[in-house]
Length: 131
Image 1: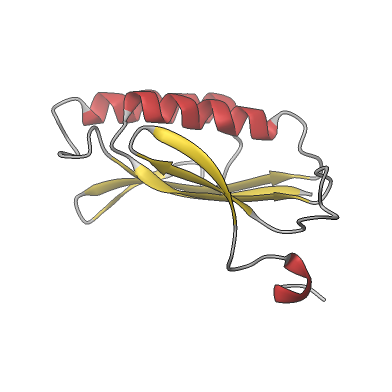
Image 2: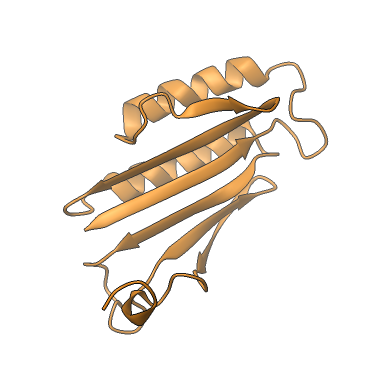
C-alpha cells in the first residue's frame, strides 16, 4: 500500500508570504493538484490564521504513478512559491529496500527545494507503530 500525508505552508518568498501574486499562484497550484492528485480533502488549500496551507492525504493499493505525480506537484510548488515550507510523510510497503528500511520517508520542502529524508519518529514501522 502507498500512502502520503502532506502539510505545507505556502509563501511567495522566505521574506514575505504574499508579494502580490500569492492568490493567483495558489489558484494555479490548486488547479494542478486537482489535475494530478487524488487527495483528501478535495479543497486541500485552506486559510489558517492569515496563512495559506496545503494539507492533504492520499494513497492507493499500489503506488503506480501516484508518487511521480506528487513529485511533479511539489516541483511546481517550489517553482511557484519558493518560500513555502513543510513536510510530506510517505510510505510504500512494496518499495524496494523495505527489508533494510521499513518505515516512512519524509519529503522536506524549504527554500525552493525538496529533499528526501528518513523518518526518525514513526519508523521502522515494526515495532514503533505495528506488531
